[in-house]
Length: 274
Ligand SMILES: Nc1ncnc2c1ncn2[C@@H]1O[C@H](COP(=O)(O)OP(=O)(O)O)[C@@H](O)[C@H]1O
Ligand SMILES: [Mg+2]
Image 1 (cartoon, rainbow, N blue to C red):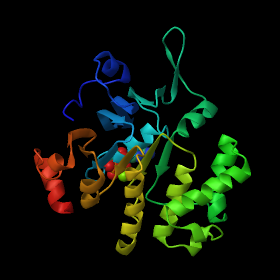
Image 2 (image 1 turned 90 degrees about the horizontal axis):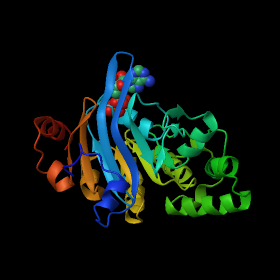
Image 3 (image 1 turned 90 degrees about the vertical axis):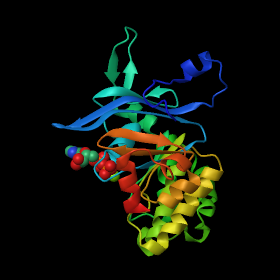
Image 4 (image 1 turned 135 degrees about the horizontal axis):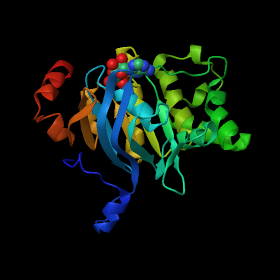
């Protein structure tokens, strides 16, 4: 898309009369600083239902911070983030002012974004099935029977139907990451955010995790995937975004950004990662 600097909202799109898909993630002019370090410098990103966006970029460019802002793990210093129409981290008062959300409503908002990290962060002392059912039961109030049935369906989806009684340490890294994906999906998020989901894996285990993500894409899941796997991005992304130094340098379909990048920085990055 060439309109990354134009604020695009569900409202303006419907006003324009174009039959657009629902906007799931709408990040506008997002700025984030850590002390004197301005890490995100006005990032705009609109993701529609069913869209798969891959974010590429050098280490330190703000990719993880951006995902953490989308899922309310970080507060932002300027701009706004809406997920499924909810202003993340804030509520608007009747007089128009914004107030930071308390822990409980923030936690509720955060359920709409499923996050998968480089390190799988499974609960080591819980069996695979319990890792997956914990949050649906505790946070969503799903009855245990229903949560278990859904967890088994998800384990089948990620190819681990025979591992429900295993503990994380009995699984390979690739298997643990697939459990982490199932665990995120169990909350039925509106969007899945992946932060370099295969970077911590031995090379021979990368494919099994990428295949699960591809399967989700084929099933229409809305996803933002930060990755260094250029071939994967070319295969599954509807849109590729190249980020550097806290800004989006260029974005577009893979055939454009990966195969015909217009910016020097993108070309240099791809030359090192292809
Ligand atoms: N919690 C934090 N406190 C201070 N600085 C941070 C924190 N998280 C990230 N940073 C800094 O923000 C910049 C961007 O980091 P990050 O978002 O992790 O980039 P990327 O994921 O693209 O490698 C880096 O300079 C990093 O040191
Ligand atoms: Mg990162």
